[in-house]
Image 1: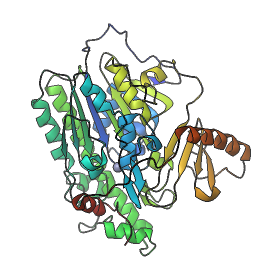
Image 2 (image 1 turned 45 degrees about the horizontal axis):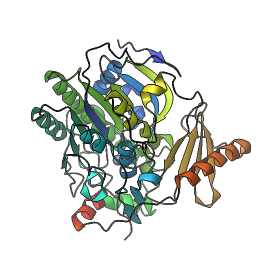
Image 3 (image 1 turned 90 degrees about the vertical axis):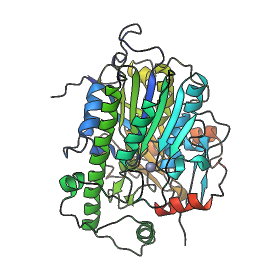
Image 4 (image 1 turned 90 degrees about the horizontal axis):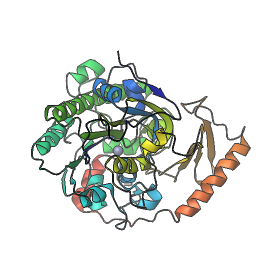
Length: 448
Ligand SMILES: [Zn+2]
């Protein structure tokens, strides 16, 4: 049975600086799982048995039970991880009306590590992490596969193999390896035995989530019965289980190469997925918890005490954390706060607000989370308020009942947005035809 210590607001996190066997310049393995809802992991409460390897990692490391992304889709979310900035500040994002690349002036995490002597490499499986968007521009080398059909993507097995092959070619420098898995993203097509275990009986020929289907669904031309979504969800679960097994293979490979002790492992997801939780399907178009609540696990033997941290943290905190573990002073631009500081009580006792922004499918949305309350603001004055403590699934909008709370949160949100400057700062892209084709297949390019 796993034993973990439960930390609340203040919990011991770091072993003494001179204790343990960690190297002065640790390696970093930064794993981003696309489209992974936190609630699919056993360590986040699922009893479906999908993620034994991630659960094991969480038992060996520090799990953040209340971690949030800053956007409900890939491009702005991963750019926030790599810059410690909100989407409005790093610029990467936009919507189906036009994608925006990352501001060329912002400093990225790989640039910081590269500048301090780390060998940096990114393995990724979507065009948003390709050259056109600037997200991985500062890695020394990249291995980006952006297929033109999401049934022909590089699957987790091949992604893990690429990472292991790269590790075998490492040199004497410490490494910073970023690995992005795409498997749980629609279309869901898990291989056996995961299909058999988690989606047996689902029609073999059944595919839901192609570009045309998504467009038709969103335009109201396609009525998808609940049963179809539940079948899709079972296939999604199979993809999660398959990816988990391949992350396990990568972690075993790290161990077999004697790199466990000297490597910081960080796992998170760029966003979740919705299966009619709030009437929608897929991701990118709301800011509810099924899309914003993400897994976050940090393991660094000898330096980080295993346990669970319950503070509200967010993706802007990742880059400062990795800098601290590597003993690098973070650039001033980094807006987040090291998770190590959060956990040792060195941070403010007030819960820090968390901003999420973006909607690639419709009206711009902003969510402002402060402690137990989450405010979601749409255009035209639409506001929703949720109490995440009593209503974590956000089934009851309290905006009418608690107008004072809405006003209080709205005021602080307005102040922050003013401080962040103009939204939509990024430059709209003219994409190369092959990049456009790749995105279209995933339903990322709208409009007939
Ligand atoms: Zn994504």
